[in-house]
Amino acid sequence: NPYGYANTVTSGVISAVGRDIQVTEGYWLRGLIQTDAPINPGNSGGPLLNVNGQLIGITTAIRAEAQNIGFAIPVDTLVDNLTHMLMPEKLRRVRLGLTMGPMQSQGQYTGLIVDSVSKGSPAEAKGLAPGDLITAIDGHKLRSTIDFYVRTMHKDVGEPIRVTYIRPKEAKPTSRVIDLTLLPRPLPDGRSLARSFFQMEVSELTAAVARRFDFQNPYPILIVTDVDAQGIAGQTGIQPGDLLLQVNDATVRNLEEFSLEMEKVTEGDTVEFRILRISIGLFGQIERRFIVRLPARALKPNGPPL
Image (cartoon, rainbow, N blue to C red; front, side, top):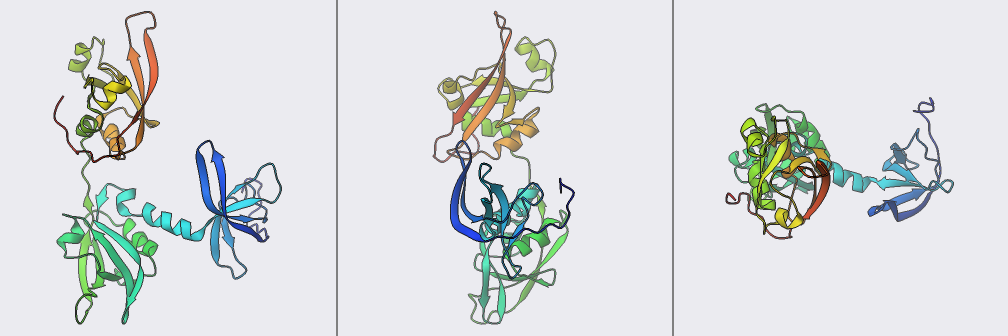
């Protein structure tokens, strides 16, 4: 607590629900709970409880120019987002291949419905299928989707995850047990993604590439080596010889860092490149930002060489 007051409780009433507030230009928080319980730097981000001590929200913002107008994210919204954030694939470069639905009951069994199973994943290899009901992980009965992901998120690659499940579609469902393991997820090919998404070639500035573009020495930096003049990058103004500094505010110094950023790009996204352009003319070097919007259409994972 910045004020030095530990274990502080404030009280108030729910003033309204479903409030929308604008945090910054173009950024809104929607569906919030409004409360007059005092919120300050000491308790912002803490739980909002009802009179029964049940969590109903997480305090997140106040109206600075007013008094006792605060806002909290509803617990349902929090659960939905946590479910997505706690997936092992979101936290580490691993693959399990399962997405989970809500808790359901099937006769004497209660568990999580399997929403989808990825092709070629450990889950598919062990025979899990959409519609299966997972009732326990490592012998612990499941209480929620978050419970499932919390129990799998700390597992090491290759460490067994004991899954107990039933198949409700069967005439007489019986409990089955399998061992799943997390597999390492390979790094995406950033060069191929740059080629297919933006029709440009990207390379690390090796000694050979540095000589090609008349740089004195190689640097730990990326360089655009070729651009299709009719492609997305070319139409935006990116040129061969441009040094690539950042992608969407993330510094990219090598192909690995670039690949991780390219993995996040999907159709319809807006991507910002920060470029350093070296010129022999009056200005010497110019730093520029190019904003590229991808079309909302299917993108091939690998494009042909330029």
